[in-house]
Amino acid sequence: MALAAMAFARPSLQFDRERIEAGNTFGIQLVFPLQDLPDNRSDLLFEPQNGFSLVKLDSADQLMRPDDPFESFFGGGRNRGYKARVYTFTLKAPKKTGRISAGSIYLTIDGQRRAISGDIPVSIQRAYADDALTVSLTPSKKSVYEGEQFYVTLGFHAYEHFQGNLQGTDMNTGNDFIVHRGDLSTIKFEPIENSRREYQASGKFAWLSSTKSGNLQIPAFKFKYTKLGEPKVVEETKQMGGMSFSSRSVKQESIEAEASSPTINITVKPLPTEGKPENFSGMVGNYSFSADFDRTNLKVGEAMTLSINIKGDGLPGSITDPKLPDFSDFRSVPPENEISKKIVGNKVITSKSIKVFLYPKKKGQFTIPEIQYSWFNPSKKKYETAVAGPWDIEVEKGDAAAEAMFQAPMATAGNGPAPVQKKEIESLGNDIRFIHQINGNASSQAPYKNILYWILFAAAVPFYFIVTLIVKRNRKLSSNAALVRKGKANKQLKARFANANAALQKGDAKALYAALENGLVDYLSDLTNAEFKGMTRPQMKQELEKRNVSADTIAAIDNWLEKCAFARFAPVNPSAEEQKKMLADVEKLCESLNGLK
Image (cartoon, rainbow, N blue to C red; front, side, top):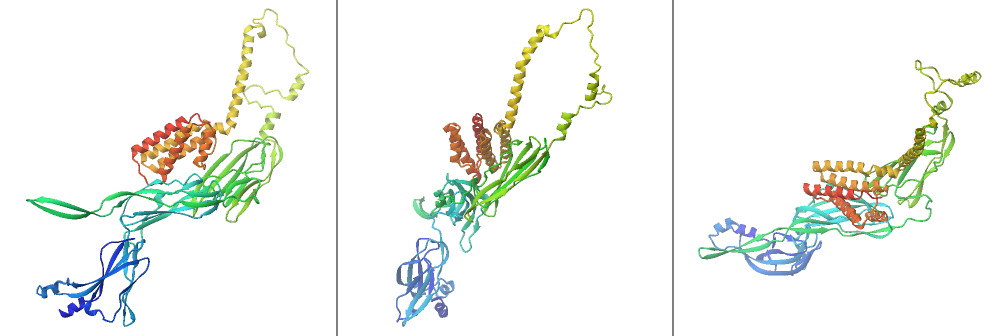
């Protein structure tokens, strides 16, 4: 038993609480048996590190009782133990969390410094009063050229008292940027190594291009979530048999909290004026351009196709058209445009294909000048130009036209006599048999002597002009791409809302919001023949104001676009009734836009 008591009576360390919170104070107690304390010693020294700080040091002599039941049993009930000096080091924990070394304890004996305890590891946890979630927003670049694309990474750090229900309340990037947003569902939380019940997640969230130069700012992203609140001591008193009993318990309740990212300041430099091409496209990034005809030899009546392909990492979802040469020797129809975008690596790549159909008006040899496309390359800090052409076009007279002009149609066997050819007409001209007047009264008079003839003749003149005007109007409408597009707007809108209804039936909320947002934007584009895709909302407002759209309607459009964009990318899950109401409201809004020009 004596040996057991000696083994127990040795210097030991213990903490004064089970949970140590970041930024708060706590105590480390060093229990030193008095019999082991040397006489020729100096005061204990605690050297903190890693952000810990020593607040104060207290000491007191205490009788330490063994907790070993073996010692208590054989001690015969006597209060056996040993005297020890208890040193209490009050420390303040740093703000960071995790398992961190707080420092070391030293004692100087006979002038020599000796370590009583080496590095003391401490598990620091987030305070319940602090946020359970921190949000970061990190740009890939803080200094860009106007129109240059960059991306922001959205990050989350969840601490042990985070309980979920994460919802975005505001993820607006401001009015100075054109944005392509990613999908929050791809951002997954993973446990942090050596951190107790802490998780983190990050991912590229948005790709942006500025619409102007200067010192711009991306507002803070805001989220709400649920966390575990601070422990509260609850005292209860109960009456039983004329006696009162008091009890104390610690309770923690779930509370709703908010978190936001810091704002981001972006310096946007204007494009240089030196070396700027005359036909600069306005695109900023790394681009490729190609253009070519599918044929250079054709006949009158045939068509040739000019295919133009542009691809680059500048403005997400938008590419300007090149300046086309004069096609006055050709008849053209409205071109076909197709634009797409996808994420490749760290950038959003936008591709655009244009097909121009040209019909030669006459035969001959024609030269179509070269087509240039210029952009500013921010990585090289200079303008670049790609050139396609020129092209030499040879047009021959069409075979079908020659036959119609110079040859008479051939009669089909069995369908009557063959038509008279040119030589036969010359031969018959020398032997014309004159018509002799028939004696007697004719059964009818000359048509021009009948009043009905002149009535029909007079009616035919305005009828001719009416038909001519209708034909010309139809041709004009068919050649006017804007009118054709506007005429198909309602039909296209029905197809888009059919997709929205299908998404609603499937319960796919994100697909529903995407269909509503795209449907509203495409409907505006079809009605006005203006490309609203790629515009910022302030630009859309200006465009609608130019067309005398009421302020209430503009506000409603902006409000619904904001709702759809937010609902697509925020981790929200509205009910089926809310989704159905949103679909009905957007349909009603589109009906009110039917007269837009």
